[in-house]
Picture 1 (cartoon, rainbow, N blue to C red):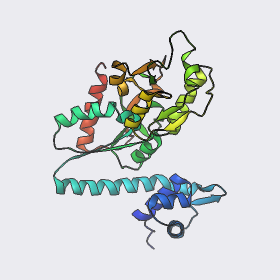
Picture 2 (picture 1 turned 60 degrees about the horizontal axis):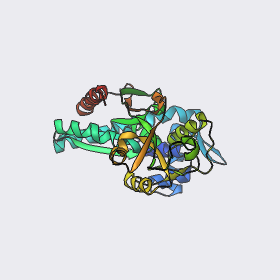
Picture 3 (picture 1 turned 60 degrees about the vertical axis):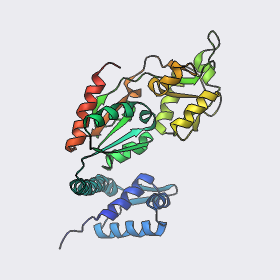
Picture 4 (picture 1 turned 180 degrees about the vertical axis):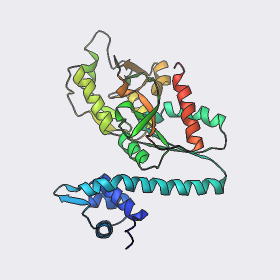
Length: 302
């Protein structure tokens, strides 16, 4: 008897459920109805002959069999995407570079690195995905992107760090918000809302840790979403809020005196951006060329 085959759609549905830990949430992300997802998972479990999900009152979790299947689903989808990209590249005659980056990096670091690479490698078809750290990490694992810019704290054992960038990180607010000779900086910031382009678990954890290290408890709910770097820039200029970002993101406004920048003292590598790929995954020619270029850029004095 032939062994059951794992098809692409079943792998896609299973991966969506595993990530969302909810049948209904997976249905939304897949653009279908809950019954379709349930039926697809039931068919997959019936084909393999084991239970893959464990139901509980908060949603679903993976059984040990489901945990074993998960990396194979990711690899199957990655290979499928790679096959399609290879065919399209041959048909279109243009090599492709797919980059992912967390939101703060897309405002300054990524454009700086990519602009020089594209100038030297004209004709490359470029795709850039921006999102929270968690979203970009998922895209990398699933093979939707070749490599990614992430904060150092997001790196795990599945990733290979290709380049480390030295970005000065600090608190940014309207000039005059923090009065010289007044209360300590962190106490002033504790009474203001913090805005970011998008809320992300790792970003929030980093901010809370910095307040904790300073021995300060924020006096109000910190995190709000601006939605875009442009809106965030305008909100900071209007005053009444602050953000945590690399100095280069708002360098022009800081130089013009519109915003003030206060560097985070003793920054650890966990807050610095890195370029990563999936450990053990061989990159196509153009992404591999980009990695070498990024390494050379990261080694240059900022």
